[in-house]
Length: 329
Image 1: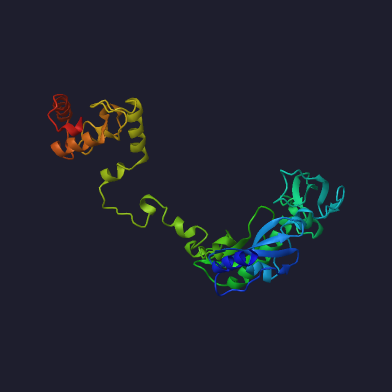
Image 2: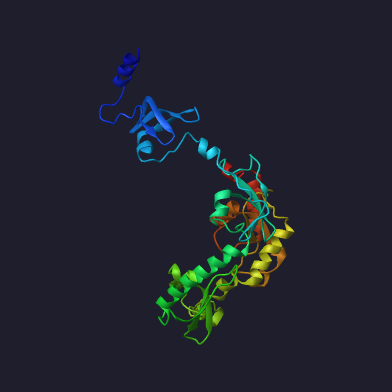
């Protein structure tokens, strides 16, 4: 009977592999071939504790498994209560629900009064020395970042980038980043984060700000000033005209005075034309809030400039009589 079963099992075994039946590996004894999963061959093993388990050929031959897991489950629990490991003081044995991957774990209190559950092996081997939130680990990170900053600074020290020349390194402190002090061609001192140099983004910063200030000048001081340009075109973008536009919208409660819509883009329309009535340009009585599409329609019918009050009243009556396309209603 035993011979028949053994022969039947051999039929389903892969041809090119080592037969491990009846061989002993630590606490495991191979009973029979189980199955093949991809390139792995699984064997049914009997442990000394009496439990069955399934292990692959590679883990058995290379001595990667010792038992079915009973030695791990029955590991010796040391009495660490009250002992201190670096900054962690052991309070008590952790509950089953709080254990880390079913390993023997202890509830510990750090010097910063925060609690943390740590494996017994990590405490003994000093793999974990604090809760991870206090300054013990931050100190190491600061020292490491300072060393990196000094290497980066030595590479570009004295080299000119745009109008800036790096002259001094300001090392990082807690919750800060390393910065670099640069001398601009204008004589000013500019401080930039070292991250900008690491990412090569300091090339975009051409100066301490003096280069950009030349382009922020307005009026006759601007480098593109054209004295021959019509004054009326300049006044359209003046701050006074922008304030007049806001006053018109607030007076009309942000509502189109022709269609009555509120959820639309509004334009402030000059009833008497802008170019032909310079005295009425900033008068609120000469303005009205109308929808953008209707504003474009009005000027497409009556042209840009030299518009009159009579034209606007005619446009309103035509709109109320629904003479225009349905898309405007």
